[in-house]
Image (cartoon, rainbow, N blue to C red; front, side):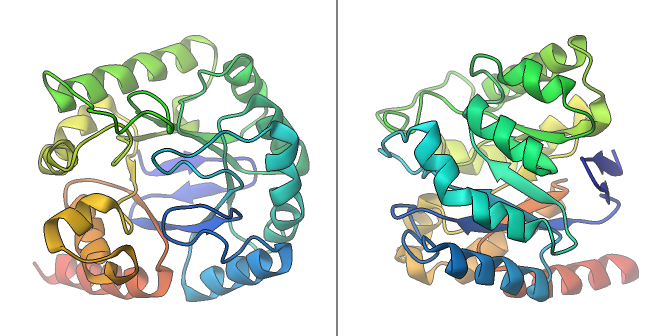
Length: 277
């Protein structure tokens, strides 16, 4: 589990890595509209790499609760120039999409990773990614879809359902010829889950490690943090870092964040503490 194989890079996961978020959208829940212009988004990519991002994750469609669906053409038009510029920055580049057409264009352009909130369930996505060279994939759990996922999500046992779903998708990919080294798993914090579900997933996160693949976890600025602290989305830096560190402590190898510099500093202290413990 110490390497994540991607198109251009074998990412060393012997220590935690930071995936920096670049939303090229007008309506993402915490930074919508800030990087909609391609030049602003490219500048954000450059800034996040300078701050310590190990991976860039570029998305052109919001997946916040209630978000509407874009056409593949509109999504691609938002990200294509940003993706091409990001690919020159010397770090792996992930494309955050659930559309097969967008995956295809991004991979043809050289993207290293497909980060799919629907775990490659779209028609053609599984075949495209499993057959496409060495690209990495992140498979996420979500109950419902972004438009409806927060309408009373329920689980008899949230950890058991998330684990079973991720195990089933992992089995499908490997049975179709995809190497395990290309796959990471995401429990999907905030995707069809109440605050109580999300906290339970954090508490029991280590129970997902027997699946045998690295965990990629995203707590950054999520509403559950606001539910606990009472703070608005723009004032959740401290709680985002705390959640990221808690997740790493329980076995996450990649944390997906907006605030790269602060998370990088926190992880440096965490790693120093591990060396002397």
